[in-house]
Image (cartoon, rainbow, N blue to C red; front, side, top):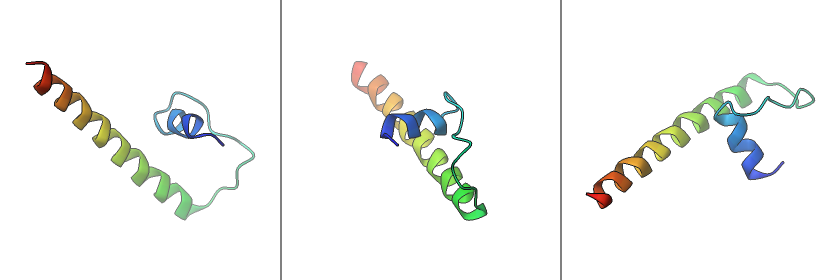
Length: 53
């Protein structure tokens, strides 16, 4: 799976692959990855705003 497809799934822009195996621990890992990705994007927006001022 490409990185862009994975990012789209994390940000709920694309449906999850139904053929992928489901595991509780993988679900936790994806949740933590989603949170860290959203925080990273928020920080990029804040840095862009500060640089443009």
